[in-house]
Image 1: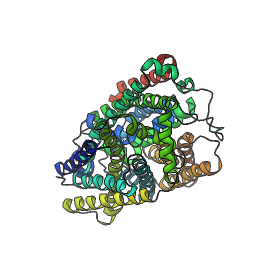
Image 2: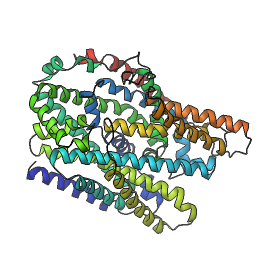
Image 3: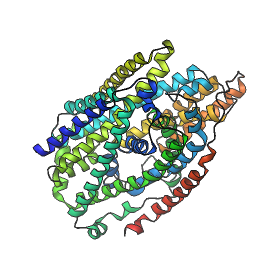
Image 4: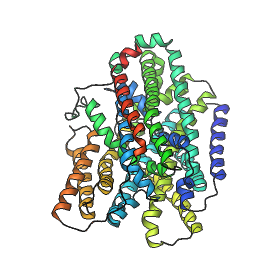
Length: 535
């Protein structure tokens, strides 16, 4: 790196401080946490994809595709459940939540069940999301330290302080528009790495001749994910489709970091476009960074200098980066092959990856804390005081995430797998709570709460004692266990139930549902034949 790279990084950071200042006018809860419900589908869709895809996809997913044993284009199967989940949310979950006029998505659980259900899920969300975000920031800081020499603690403070400042000032509008910029930078970075890597390999034909052909297989119908002790039964078609459906339905529909964007939309027609766009655009973006991973992984195997530099960086930082050697592939490629100026842009892309996830987490955590807990004791809080509390809570949760980042410790495997495992313990039971609240009438709060607790504990048991079951299944298993237990308890123990809101089925979304289901078939067929297509 030289002065050009540092100037680019400094200008980027100053620019984000400006975003917070530009959107500093926030008068009430819907302004600060929902952007005044004035956001269109395009910025919301980019923000939604940025939060999900940018967190570590630029670093860890290409590492899995290009280097990890048992990796390859089977990463594409992560996307199979997305259009199915979008279709389900469009007609069954989101219309009811949007029409309820809530800020915290967990407020609906209190309206349908009672306060205990709301507080239980909200608490689980706050702990799991802050820990997962801390792990992500921790790893990004380690990678920046190992590759470009920025001290670990300085990286965390730069990422954390800048993010907290613009989130503190601008609220949800600053977060969304910040995500839009970060998504554009990130995708631009992926394209740069892809084409530079292809150039170093001598062109597309050389790449196809040199690539490990086993990594071109994306779909395997023989793997069911129930014999996963040796890690050779992962990423089969059925666990990725079924488990992925439950994971993404929960993530996009009931995780505050994503559902808050849906609640920020201008109206249900905007949500319809947003869910459709997210269901259609994610696969091409994922395909792009998977191809990048294949190219860089192939280049690494062909270039002893690339291997030597990666080994040197890893050995020099093995204490902090143990088990994460593959995650160094992209940043080491950047510092070895790219010219100055472009290096600065790509370092900005890495920082963007961390900042977009941290900003979304900070805003959503402060929203649920204020709505689910503090307003319980101060129900008539004036708007001015509400915004003050909101900003203070964004700082508080930013510091909590940074605390976890400083003390995350060593974790096994690529970062993206660890974060997904943490989330998959909770996603199924949380989705079940909303399915029970919206789509059933006789389930009561006690049944729902017992079901949620048993669903989470059962998933923890699977993680600790049944390693043969692929973690993607936890999303489906946790959801089904929670629903079954909740229905049984509600049937055996008779209690009065709240009616909640009338179920809102978004009938106008039939065309979008047909498109999403058709698209699911298209991407599966494309993935099956991708090896032949690339050749």
